[in-house]
Length: 185
Picture: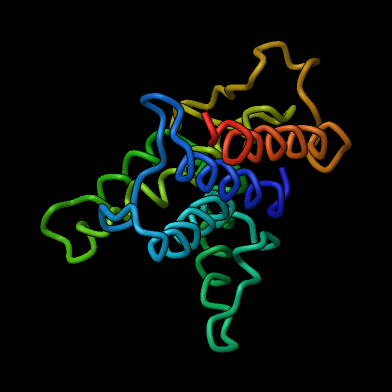
């Protein structure tokens, strides 16, 4: 999937489940706060996580982001791409586990913010979305086998085609329905 699709999927699912959890399925909270002021910070962390797996592609959305005019992610993107290529270790459960551990490690100063869970939310949804494409993902990297949903390759879609847009639209509609239509019950 493309960057804007990953961003949309991460943000709308997070906001929807922040506003209206579905049973045990709820969005992680920024610094254990359910206050409205925490929602934008949570969305920023989830958005970053939604784009992070593609740090292994120099043409990715995150690689082109600039901080104070400097493309800070571009060197990392180039280095990871040179060593591993696209959809390598950054598209695996190992990377997700490392991210969660680093983000929630009790000894680190940001652990109380829940950054591991927030960034991990976007990261995990990115992996799930890329698993829907024909290319699939190396879920159990360093094993070379690619994982896709559904398992039958012919039923998956190519990145940037109309099925991608349809999936993003339907998921966004379902999230808006969850967040607002069901809220009155």
